[in-house]
Image 1 (cartoon, rainbow, N blue to C red):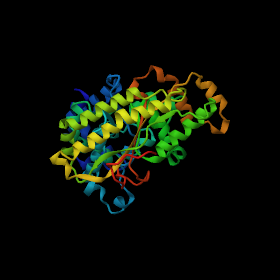
Image 2: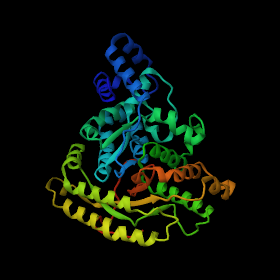
Image 3: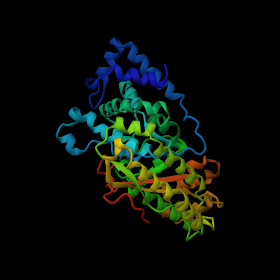
Image 4: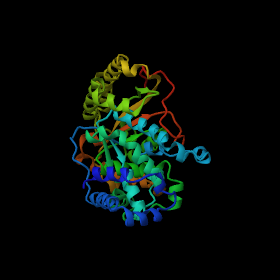
Length: 411
């Protein structure tokens, strides 16, 4: 039984009552007695993920890993206080789906943590590591709701647009070692102060492991990345250069009062968005290496004027003509930035050694390792994307910026 079949079995053979918030020993005992099919599905899913590797990607395909997307899937304290979780869990995750689908309109693949892995581990009471960007799935009931909600994305899963990864297995085998030099959980102190620095650091490692572009959905993320990059550039003696070579802000369309089913259909069938994704791939290929290039400013201006600006204007014009979504088009927009990570000839050790000891952070160490590897990575994974939504980092769901989306502006 493969991962998809095992996940489908897990969904069909479980219900809300099987996942009390703290543990699932009662359910696990019942499963062992009464449901060998479910036990087989869980064993098959976890065994398959033990051997899992990310599927091979086309060199120029734009894949994104957006960790703060998962922060938006957390239920608010107000909802918890109103005991709304059990009543409104499905609609809560419908909003999460709309976020995922908005992003999927503009890129080739979006990576999503598979809640089925967390549900399966909860059932078997396997110890789950404390990891910052997936805390929203730490409650098995939340993971169960997420698992069921994501069923509506199955057409995009089958097409490879939405792609699952095992968050716990990937952390245990790859991410933790790259973060800490060995396997360990985050401490409670680290988790309580994770946002945004450690959060971004962990997200960059996940993105690199998946050969995806880091996509920042909040300003603190992109600002944190830029600040750390500037510090590294200064330590390398490149005082006026940037590790993250960013294009000006642009506005992408945002839709309100849309169903996941409608956005799935738009993603699969509307040529306007495919044309935009094709031009975005072209822009990603053309983005300069960054900090050490004397042609940086000129090249970024050319990409903006000749590729991205016309692409955005064309997309916005055509969206107004698509009958089934034009009435959902909001005057709000999503601020979009594309940038590239710059490679350096100076060694990572030299860069870190040149920094004041107090300025060396987990993020700067991860960035140095990533930049040293940039020449060997897929061209598209050198890209950093930002979809700025104007929301506070803890405010919940993707919210559009309240500004006219048909105009372009410089940062």
